[in-house]
Image (cartoon, rainbow, N blue to C red; front, side, top):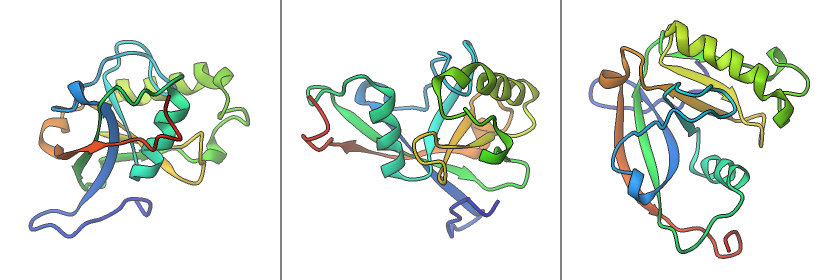
Length: 165
């Protein structure tokens, strides 16, 4: 687990991940069950990133348009560290076209297998935007979700005016 950011806490080491959300959905860790790159419909996962900046880049490429009229929040999510908490997917384990939208079917199959097995709470996947950095997909239906995952803080996230309409 060398890619995890370990923090000194009073009890158990943990990692922090980040997620940007529309403000009205930022009070809890809500998973919609909508399909995305690494999950099929009705698979309730949270997409998060290893840094605030990666979370912002992922949001920018995922949304067709961001509006300064919409309020956003950055969520800091704390996950207790455990050897069994994480399954890592490395870029060299993926098809050459994994960064394209045409690879969604293959990537969803990988994610769905992981989701269904529930062998780990988190699926670490390379970012299609910056393959050297990782996104963390959290299975909200995993048995350890309620005891290992905590929303630590939410803060206003103000987009730079050069990035939004």
